[in-house]
Image (tube, rainbow over all chains, first blue to last red; front, side):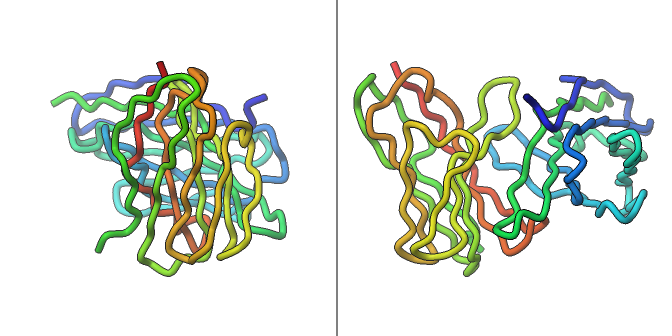
Length: 114
Length: 111
């Protein structure tokens, strides 16, 4: 039972255009959401996050949108660059009273074409 | 800045063999985690630790053991390797959920 789902395994976008990566979740107790980026042969690196009390968070070219009623979040990259080509993981966590554990989606391979 | 260091990077095991995946962090993080990533799947939590001497099971702990004798080290032990344990293993440490720092991974193949 996947609590965090990324239904698009891959996405190709032209350089300079917008990339939109989507993520759905089922656990209504999740209150913190993150995006990680992963290059081949490297570990994931933190990209951007959003708390459930917000509906948008922006950091440079990256914006994350959260729609709590739809249990949906998305990552927008504008403009997309070839260096953005990587696997993007959506992750979510809830306050369990102990160390917050992340639940990851299966990832979306983004390819930005020059 | 070493961050999180995992060794080895690659390993091939025969069924039934045992091995220890090493993980060391130099950021004085209290929280440490072991994840595995199977092809086409997200990362799944195996074990985690909130501090030296304290460990707990994650989503997929069967077939693994961990220990946390120091803040820096969090080794993952496979006692009887099985083909189902073929995966890429990531160690991570954090102070918060946004502060996860991952190692570069260990690619394990069990044949």
